[in-house]
Image: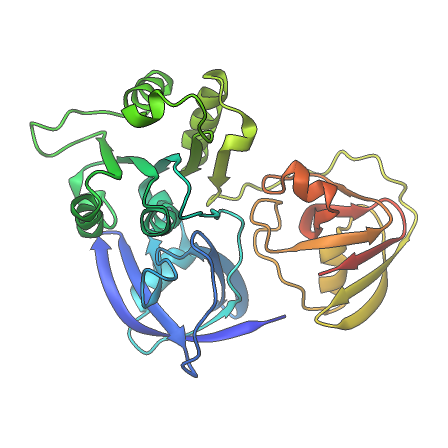
Length: 351
């Protein structure tokens, strides 16, 4: 398992409840990553190690420094611990960057992107927006960002700078449920407002093109916000392939309802050029069985939502109890999520 030894080099207050932490490798080597990805931090807490994933707001090729942004979560022990204890010089251990909430850009492409976020959901969205504005100058980006009031807007100054720098390419719409300024309307995203805003902000040059790449939608925020966005866009006629989402909140999964023979299955596993062989019995996942044997595989959410544990099934059959990130194309290539993957037969797995 590849681990990064990082150090906090700067702490930047964003709001009353959110800080940005600039990180670099302790040995000074650069960290390769893609816009929209996250770091899974290994944090010593109350005598044991906990894992928490935090998205990077920085974008490679745009920002010189890598950074994450952490917002205080209600009843969130780890976010509170970070905000109260991390300072310049704090040492941090992390898995290598991962995540599939990314975008492939083409400098010759002209496309329309919608980014819909709420609260700290702006963090990976901000990274992707900067990448697109820099690498696809003919594309247009519309950002719909929900917050409580003006003081809770993360990256407020940076977003204003992007608006000025990319005035014809970037449209920013702030939705505030409790604005402090009287001239700002009180708006909370709902089905009707989303449908209205999507229709109103399709740039005119894109409306009259007969042949155009489909508009893409990227969303990140609380579960209820994301469900509403997903449902509304599908009702509006947008295809599943046009919709991308990043989950921050990981629910506790109910016991799997898969029908799998409970007899032991053999797992042949390749990771970091090492071969492992072990048995797994349903309802233990492929990942958990490996961890029980102290085989240190990469993972974060254990809920089928972040893709940190993605591997390829070379032979045999794996059934998954949940999948929020792998596409049909990924599944066709044999990719599986080991954290929710159960061996239905003897299997060969490769990371």
